[in-house]
Image 1: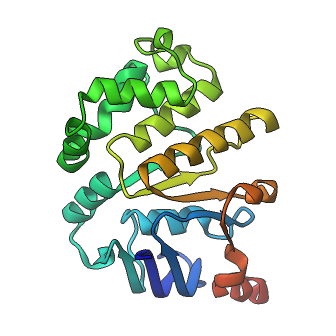
Image 2: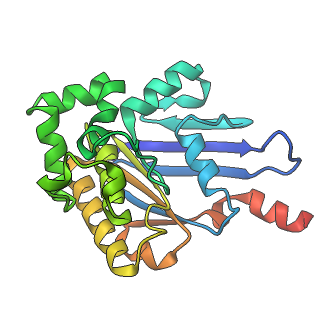
Image 3: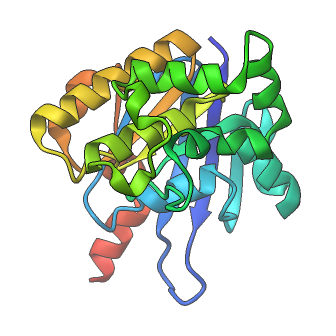
Length: 236
């Protein structure tokens, strides 16, 4: 299998802090893997995702995604790379309240010609959005509703459909089940993994909830690979 994500000698610290937040020698994730990354609050989970998305730049080291060293790209090219190759599912979903369910799902295609081209290769963008919503258990009556009229669980599935549309190679989910009860949480993860399997996406799912590990074929405890955690503990 090819390496979708490869990190080497990564060091990141916030400018106002003396101690690093992340100090990772190596991390490799292969194409098509379902990866669960766990760690308590403050262990650097969200910072790592921001680095992988090119939102933050490390102090040193390499971040290679799809054989592209993204941390050396100019800001504009990092933005394009993220739009073309990464689908994000955020903890708070970040849906646009004045857009309908369908419009929210279609939004990434406005910023990514490659994702739009992949959709149009096999049909219309609206048909693909409806297919994803249906597979994620959102039905036709929801399509033209405002996202603000939906339950938390329904909003979560809209956010997943938005991330999946156009088959980006990497899906990153940042604590997306934290506000759901156990039954809805488990159902959502099963639906998400099924869609990733169908599209061939690589899935990174970040959570502090270790009970979710059983759904994934690779499990990473950030405390075990992030040497900055030990340093901060010693400094305390």
